[in-house]
Image (cartoon, rainbow, N blue to C red; front, side):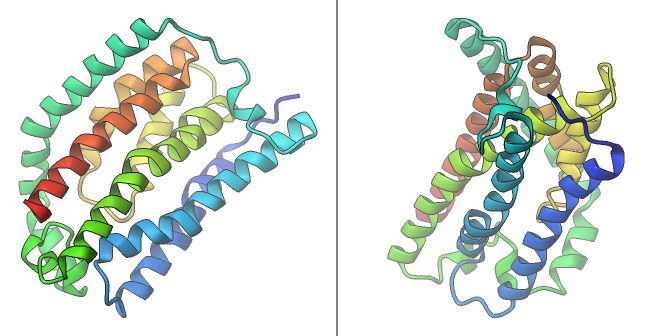
Length: 242
C-alpha cells in the first residue's frame, strides 16, 4: 500500500533536514580550521544523508514491512541504456548552456546580496575564494577535492534524487504534471547553502525532472545530477589544485 503525503508533510520533509544540516554547518563553520567545503561534505555525509535515507527506509518499512527502498523504486519502468544515455547527455548539454548564459546573469543580479551575506560570515564560507583555500597545505586541499568529488558526484546527488524525484514526487498527493515542477522548485529552495542560484538550478533540473516523472525512470535524473556535479567538481579541483 502506497502512503501519500500532504502539503504540510511535504514541506516538513523538504525543509527540516536542510534546516538542521545548514544550522550545524553555520555553527561549526565559525570555529572551522579546515576548508569549509570539507566540513560541508563531512556534515552532509553524517547528518543530511542519514536523515533523508532514514526517512526513505522508514517509508519502505511502512509500505512493504521491511526497511528498504521499495517505496522509492515501486512503479519504475526500465529503459534501454542507449536511450538513457542520449537523454542524459542532451540535458547535461542544456545545463551547460544554462551555466554559460543564465548563471552569470543571475550571479550579477544577486551579487550585492551575496556580498552582503558573506560579509557577515567567516571567509571560508565563500567556496569561490580560491586564494583563501590555497592557504591550506596541499595534502589538505587534495583530501578536500577527493572527498568533495565522492560526496558531490555520488553520495549527495544519488541520495537527493531518491529522496526528491523518487519518494517525494511519487508520494505527494497532488496529481498532474505540475507535481514535478513544484518538487523541483522546493528542491532548489532546499539548497540553503547556495541561496542565490535558484533560477539556474530550477531551469537546469526541471526538464529532466519532468521527463523522469513522465517516463517513470529515476535513473535519468540520477545520472543527470551526477553528471552535472561531476563537471562542477572538475572545475573546482582545477581551480584549487591547478
